[in-house]
Amino acid sequence: MGKRRRVAERRKTRPAVLGGMIAVVVGGAGFGVYALYDGGAAADERSAATASHRAVRTGPLTATEIHTASTRFLTAWQQGSTDRAADATDDPAAAGKALTGYTKDAHLKDVTLVPGAAKGAKVPFSVKATVSYQGLSKPLTYDSSLTVVRRASDGKPLVDWHSAVVHPELRDGDTLVTGASGTPPVKALDRDGGEITSARYPSLGTVLDGLREKYGKKAGGTAGVELRVVRGKASKAAKLSDKTLVELSKGTPGTVRTTLSPALQAAAEQQVAKRARASVVALRPSTGEILAVANSGHGFNTAFQGALAPGSTMKVITSSLLIDKGLASADKPHPCPKTVTYGGWKFHNDDDFEIKGGTFKASFARSCNTAFISQAKKLKNDDLTKQAQQVFGLSMNNWAIGVPTFDGSVPVQSAAQMAASLIGQGGVRMNPLNMASVAATVESGTFHQPYLVAPSVDHRTLATASRTLSPKTLSQLRELMRYTAAYGTAAEAMSGLGPDYGAKTGSAEVDGQKKPNGWFTAYRGDLAAAGVVQAGGHGGDTAGPIVAKLLKLGS
Image 1 (cartoon, rainbow, N blue to C red):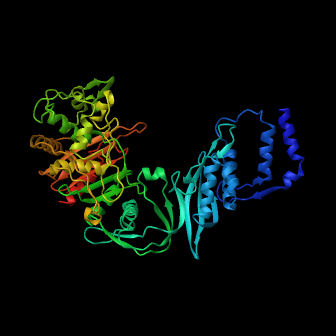
Image 2: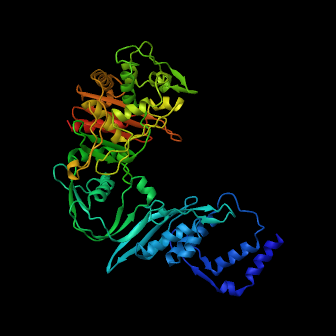
Image 3: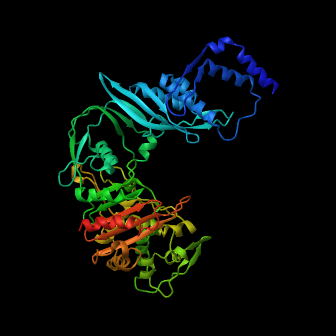
């Protein structure tokens, strides 16, 4: 304690240090005090160096620590002191590079940062700046946030650095760049020739970005000048497209026609807006044309790029496998006990129900997990993977729809994980586009790779499946889905849509999530659709009405 007092006294009696301090006010709620920098920061470092024997600070951050660390960073950034701002983070090298690029590459100036009230260690703030490039300028405003953490080595409070601090659209490795876009804009049209805009269809913002990235240079337009997010390697691996933030001068757009139906797209937007975290896709089974895609969250296209466990909707694929191998038949008896143990795991049905003396059709319609798990011991580890690839065209990462997609994943697994895959858990990952394609394959009898832009536009090759289901298997699979739509877990949602229809519901458990993700995939005539409501509950109650509405409208 004596040494700590001497350090404090030494600082108090050094007028040169105090004289070097600069007092700066950062306006906004929660920041009504002065922040001391330059000489003060240097004095802090000297004090830390001479008091290295101190114990590392631990425990929760105090409000004062959060306030001081965040204010130090925001003030330095606003003043254009890149080095000082970077030093206020836990990754000075990355922060320095990003903040330098903010000025030199993005050409942003007159930056004003207004912090809001902290929520724990997270501090929101608003940004106002001017994009200025070769005599052109436009204002830029947005909201962001930062989080304060303790540095492991000494417990010092610092800003936890991520590129999203600079702008929420950035992922680590992405950059902001202002200049000639390089990629001309595109004017996207629906199948009837109407223009597609994100103002009209909010869900299609990411789709328009993807169309521009792929077709901008091919569609005959000329580039403009803009501030945009240029994606790094990690974002490219995640198939995220570059994104325009501010357009300083307009380019001349080229024209790209899509397969989207304006009526179905409008309905899809309306339906997902009724639920949080909902996504849906509708397509034409006979061709693969995508007619609608919508998400209630517009920042990420879950419908095309999500990677979620599909739950019991996966039983469509699994059923085709079991029927192919003679392990199940629609109208033959099939076990559905309360529980089944395989690979050391004990698998349950919802509420531990059982069906005594029931058929496979009854188990499918009621979504009996154990009816499928009980067959795991008779299957090879790669059987389900091959079925998904060879019949349904999934899990090969080769779809070319016109914009980035995730094409499903059914990895080869063993023991309990293999058994879990049979019911759409384990390592299986899908999205509504994938599951709409599954329903479409059952309806048409043949896999047609979905597409948003006709392959004739750029002469690309669509993915194919190496085989089709036998007439016997296909007939039984359609009977399973028809029975489920009429009398099973999908009956309420599909009421009044028969008789040329079929459906399957699903509920996928997610760790740390109170309610499961609700899935629904179905077809009616030459229209198939699938949807998911994350953390929504049972698929028949959540995603079911969304899908059914599109099927009814599209008939």
